Length: 134
Image (cartoon, rainbow, N blue to C red; front, side, top):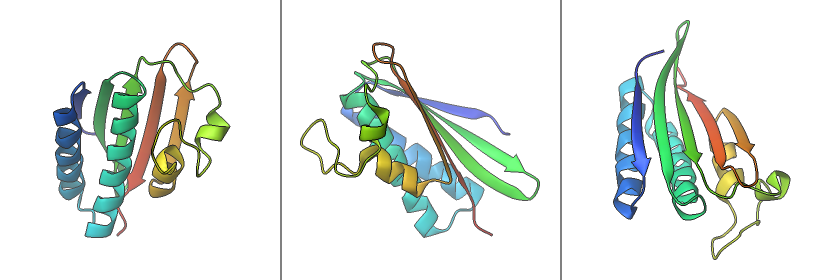
């Protein structure tokens, strides 16, 4: 595992910074354009959720190596209200706002591994990993 990059999620501009940082990470690892887009899309959705629903938070990017495999792990944390019904939140069509309801479930489909840890009243942490295809 290589060093971690950390980005705050406090402003609209931070959401753009996240997209650029994640794109750079996928390029560094050697992801193809389709997988770059998948990871950037998932990161953007997770960061936006932390910003809008969690009142801000942080994103860390870790570079992974397992034998010949290389990947990226995104960890998005917030100290917001948490997710009261995680199963519902992961269901397509579920939305707490004006979105399309593809958020968490969509992000989960774009990544190889996806974990959500949320305690109502204590925030949410999402850990999502994608491995480069050789």
